Image (tube, rainbow, N blue to C red; front, side, top):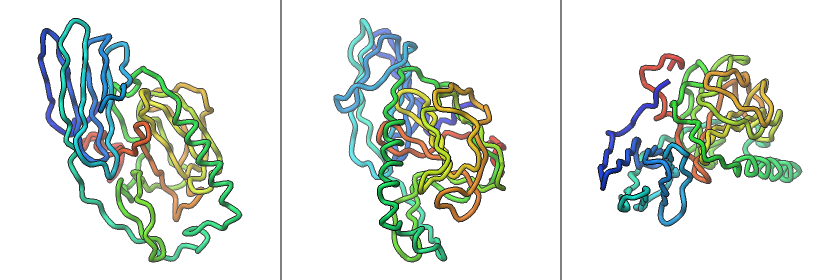
Length: 271
């Protein structure tokens, strides 16, 4: 599947080399870059992973603001510098009532389990690979109806909670979940406290997908999977009000929005 470019192609020609930037500097957005092999890239002075082919990616968090300085140094060429002004977004408010109190506020006895889950997830997301396994673009991981969107603020039983960082796809239990892009499985867990059956798939350079509430996990950690490969099945495990896939994406420690990466003409999701 091809990558949907959510903003116009930015093409810069500088001293006999080119830097291509595709995407949007927007809250929750991603910018994909391509430069010469051997290029060094920094964002606000911090080194960014670059593939041997010169590919790199930059992400922006849900509430990120301000301007980021991108600097690209290619062999034998002058430094290219661009200020990326992060554009703001409006987010929906979602209300979910009727949940058991223990679902909204975990029992103190569950606190250590929640902390251990968080440690496992953080460890899986520390995996770094300079390869750009995402370069062929992204496809829908499951067929279904979009029932929740990135960035929305959920109010559970009248209590405001943390924003929702995923794209929810509602579908019957057992619906196939497939890899939206190539990558390495860095974690699987059958029953995390909040997310139930969980898979983390690393697409390279700190860009990863996480799949929540699965009824079945059909891959093992350490397995490399290709786009479209079956990895699990939709369920309602963990803290879920019904069967659906919660698909989340991270770039390093920033939570980003998967939906703009999907072609609006792609009929894999019946939305």
